[in-house]
Length: 177
Image (cartoon, rainbow, N blue to C red; front, top):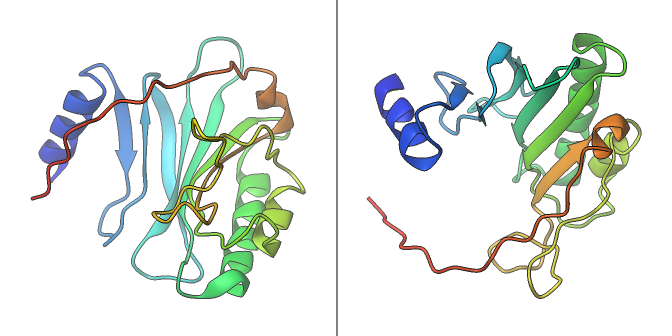
């Protein structure tokens, strides 16, 4: 419910955080932000019916807004299915957001490798550098640590705002309901 999502955001991030989450999806996408969300919406995923792509325009400090897109690409359809999703996303991002906008595209891409054609499509207008890695230098993020599932791609102009970050390893309790 909206109240449960609000409670989750308040607990995990803080009461001052904003969010947008798609409705009516089995596997919903969403955006959580410390900055105000000025506009948000959903784009139909051309390959699956149980979720959409979610976007939000964030009012970040400064004179330019940040456009964020949250995705969960099709795992079962293989690389050709994800390529169709990438083509759709590229068209939507280019036609919806202003030219030169600060853009972040992030989520579970379900890639089998860093050479998938969908990533090639994304790299025609977004940057895949630097590639984050864990403390052991492994950039793979699936459960077996053998595939690059999770990504954060940005517009080239947003890359200038990167700040090196190192997260300390901790053991967090996992609660399964």
